[in-house]
View 1 (spheres, rainbow, N blue to C red):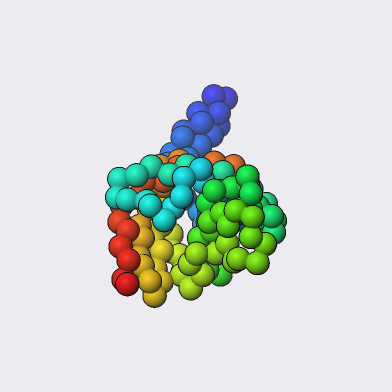
View 2: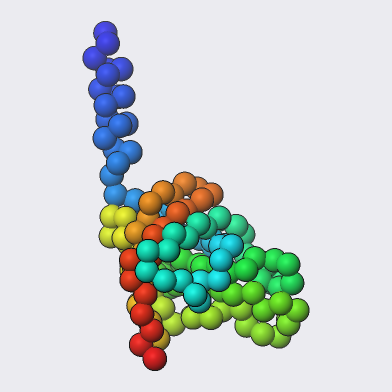
Length: 134
């Protein structure tokens, strides 16, 4: 009678270390550091949040990113009091996920992040590569 219980426990253990699904990554994430200054080996901590028009104004979020289901990637920054300034810093980028590696590619730069931990509300990544093509 114990066999089904042990099989369930062992299956849960092994499948929890499988590849990260893109559904966990898709969404809008904020960060407490400005991503413009990110460098290799930096650790970035993101919190998943619903986007609003006022999110990147005044004392709102400092920075953030959005991963869409159709692989568009956008980086956001705080525009302070300006309601006319677009908070999107990079809007022409695409993202790909392979196991725990996020690759972001656009006309201006390419970035690689390794996901260290991700839940439905928090994501922690390490910057492996960042370079501007400007």
